Structure formats: C-alpha cells, structure tokens
Length: 98
Image (cartoon, rainbow, N blue to C red; front, side, top):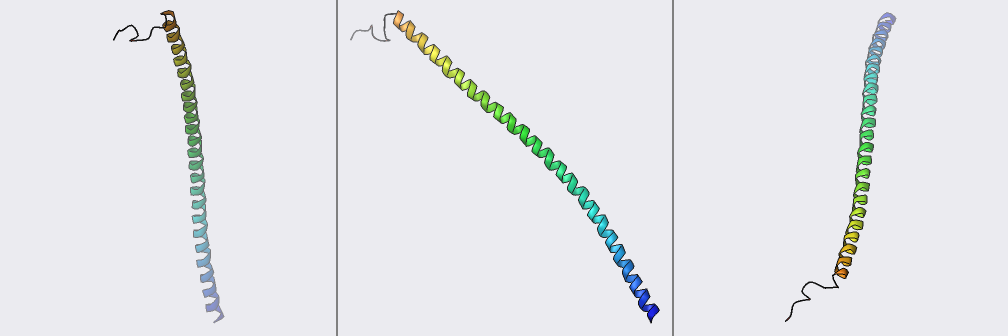
C-alpha cells in the first residue's frame, strides 16, 4: 500500500505543479496586459494634458481678443466724439424744426 499511496501523492503533486505552472503563465499574461494598460493610460493622460494646454491657449487668445476689441471700440468712440465735437456738437435730428 505504501507504493500505491506514494503513487497517488506523486500524481497529486504533478497535478499541483501543472496547475501552478498554468497559474504562473496566467500571471505572466496578466502582467503583460497590466503593462499595456499602464502604457495606454499614460498615453491618454499625455493627450489630455495636450488638449488641456490647447484649450488654455485658446482661452487666453479669446481673453486677449476681447481686450483688443474693447480698446478698439473705445478708440472708435473717442474718435466719433471728437468728430461730433468738431462738427459743433450737432446731434442727429437737432437741426430739424417742429
């Protein structure tokens, strides 16, 4: 009986070793997948940073354009006021009699 028991134990150990070998292969595959996912996440983060930078630059351009427009309109208003002043302060419709 000792030989049969020993044969069973050896067979059981061989199954365990085969199972552990399969698990080891699965773990290696999981590590490869995890590394790939990590790279993908890093790429997405880099793209997100680039997009955020682009949006921030666009926002700054809009802020600058708004300021230029305000300055331009102020200049036009001052110029129009000077023209009105040079014309004697006449306002539209002021020369009409009732």
